Image (cartoon, rainbow, N blue to C red; front, side, top):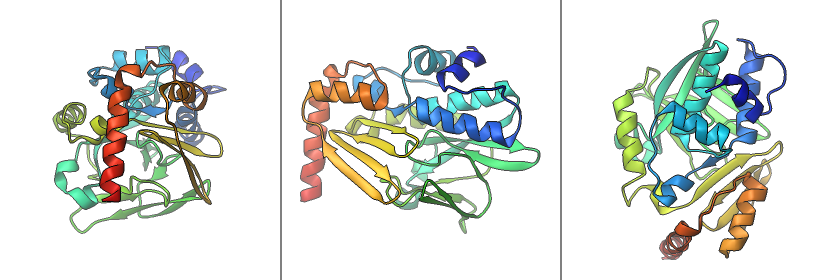
Amino acid sequence: MDLTAYLERIEFSGTPAVDLATLKTVHHQHLLHIPYENIDVQLGSPLDFDMQRIFNKLVTANRGGWCYEMNGLLGWALQEIGFEVTRMCGGVMREFAGDEQIGNHLILEVNLNGDRWLADVGLGDGIRQPIPIAKGSHTQQGLSYKLATMPDGFWRFSNHQHSNVKSFDFMHQPANEEQLAQRCQWLQTDPQSPFMMALIIQRFTPETIEVQLGKMHTTIRAEGKQTTEINSLEAMQEHLQTTFGLSVDISPAWDGILAAHKKFTEERTG
């Protein structure tokens, strides 16, 4: 595990320092060069929190990962640079599904000279750069985000207007690592897990966010989004390489991806 290799992977230029400019640049460069993806879950390959495995996958093998891997790697890299980083439990869609969602998302607090910043490269289509952990609204590349406090003591992050993932909640405190591990296991094994039910790949470009959900590919811009359908394995494999920079054989999971897409479509159309 070598910081220089990570910085080369995200194409960071210059010398990193413990300052806001470095924090913002590393965060953004990570998103531009390492995609969010759940291909291993679709293939049935077990995932854990081992940092050496995560480093080998995301840096050495030029793969992407889900939140536990993406923010796990970012947190490690920022600590190597010298930042003070705290892992925290998030609950994606707790707003709608309740407390059982807590731990289904890993996020980071970065303490920089007493200012607390929310860093999160693991939501897939969330913030491009860290935002202060303080009540307020933020606009990045024309997309709007919000942090607010809830009456029950949780913070709520509201995602941009074009996202399918509307929000996540978190307590501003160090993560319960056992809770994270339990949700990580459930998300990659339970048939009701959204990660079991659909292929999910997301990546930022300088102008857009590219999202793959099952067979559907969506390009998100500030003014709206455009969706197309990818109908063959050959087209999908080429798409993964050209759009997301991923050279992964997904053929063992293709039938499942098609079946999940059909089920999802049928349920939406009633």
